[in-house]
Length: 124
Image (cartoon, rainbow, N blue to C red; front, side, top):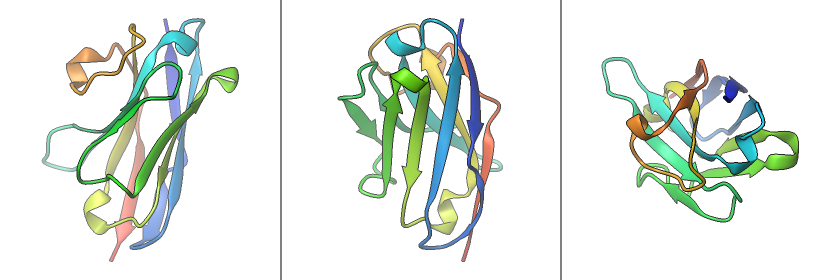
């Protein structure tokens, strides 16, 4: 079992940066792939990016590629989403997720554990 808690969301101007953290508890976090998702009002939840258990393989959605970076520190049981050059269209609730598998996946249904979400609002 893995419990996830996101933090670091907030209000930022376009072009600014935020770093989200995902604190995990549970013995299996270090062997679990992680994903970051977001959901804007009226839209479906979408994958932002994912990272494998070791942190040496990542995948990013096209819309954030080159601006966002996913990382993890298994010693601290924490995952991160660094968001740079933020745009108003990045406004959403951001969720971290983990799965009972070392390799990441791109579908929300493939993840077993979810955080409560943190709001990110980018003003123009």
